Length: 372
Image (cartoon, rainbow, N blue to C red; front, side):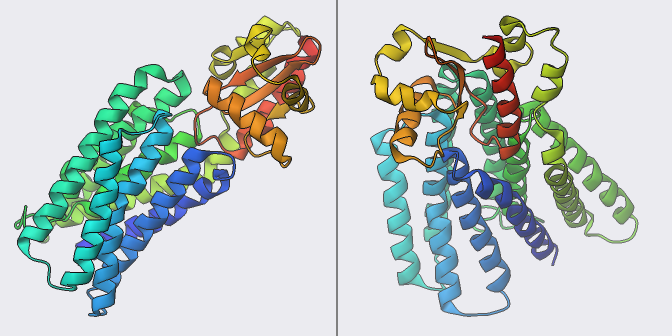
């Protein structure tokens, strides 16, 4: 019963977290991959809720197929976060495992042997470990905002390994609570912080500590009344995590990145002072002269027609030029500093920057061009 409640809470949390990811998907490859991962996870949780109620073989088959493809979807997200492709062998392992276990699901139907379940658990754990290794290696080559995003996911994945393994009864038959849904909540809490300036590993730990405290209080209260204190603590933890997510989602637009407030405190209209007002601008790259000479002048001229440039421009030629320059500079936005001489500011805001940040950067762009 408690496992069902925790799974239901996790499903609601995933659906809530999917909304901002879907909103940013058109502008961010990271958000698009995260949306896909959230979609698969929501389907998995929904099927887990349905299969005990509706004893139908197609539902069980669908459940195992979705579970087989989750590591592949997670690997695609990790590739975007790291801004590099995974090694060929890792990709083949993810793709081959998805195909193999999908075929196994169709073949076995409802009855999975203990060996097959252990093989699935071992493969998923191996994929998690390989993704963690890739992120650990790639983090030093990323810019500050992107490294912060990556570190949050890295910590979340490290925390989810024991929780995810507890989902397999063949490995831990006496576990009082299945941790798969709790692992989903950890991932969702980590990603929910990536849309604002609190997206750090310490922020994720703070969220987990708050939720753990709530679960502990529930356990202490329940200890005197019933023996299922640990299960109730898990449910209390899950509910606290959901409430944190709801609070953050509601306050996300109002909180912003702090860029507008920082610009408001800049004395005068001095360009260096504006660029040093906020870490987002201070870590930006100024592109001029030789750095733009490698690109066709016509492409640069099209980019300079826009005060601020992202990867979601309507014009196809300009969009292609923007994406090429954004990829080369590991940036998410380009701000026009001046037309003559042509100068652009490449800003790396992290892969899940929301539309609210676009408005803040538009204001910054006006000030920057005016001061140039």
